[in-house]
Image (cartoon, rainbow, N blue to C red; front, side):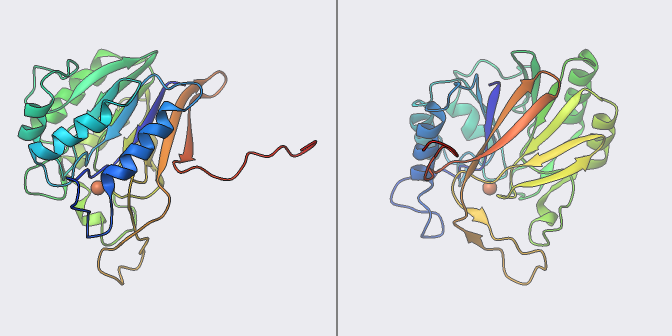
Length: 268
Ligand SMILES: [Fe+2]
């Protein structure tokens, strides 16, 4: 198994549940236990932003403690709830950042698949931004390798998905250029995103946009925009990605919480 994606942890300090109801750190602890028990063990865990809820160093300290229990390398991206300066101050020991940029963007090789992580965080904005520097970094990385299967990871989806309460906070600035760059790189197998706290798939620029539910709370599915933005305790998920002979990159969505079973169809 190549790697796992999870997203939108929203870790908060203990005794301070999100919206008075969501123990986000508790959800993360259960997810870490689940990931450590996967067989085969994933080579890495990718987390596509909203790592913490209020962008503070105290929350990042808590996040570090929780992630230390993971048995595999973790690759982190920033979301709108993150804080770039607090993040960089809290994770100075991570060695995969691209030192050539002030943004948290980097390329890593995951056993034959290239992972490009983008930083769409813009301080004070719920929506995402890819400025010229970030787009040029992506353009350079894509130009370096036009053949290796490549996954682009980012927090904000780059297109509207029919959720009137969430679409205004998608990737806005830089979205058109981003689409052009992806359309020019046929070896991009996936765009992996979060932010929506729902499972959403769409065709995008000749590849597949795949948005994952969060590790804790989910956003209530309101395709009519009839309610104020609301959340629900729909089941959290993880996503396994693996190269399968004859198919290429294949992705399996898996519920995070334990379920009854398995039972054999015959002889049980
Ligand atoms: Fe989020």
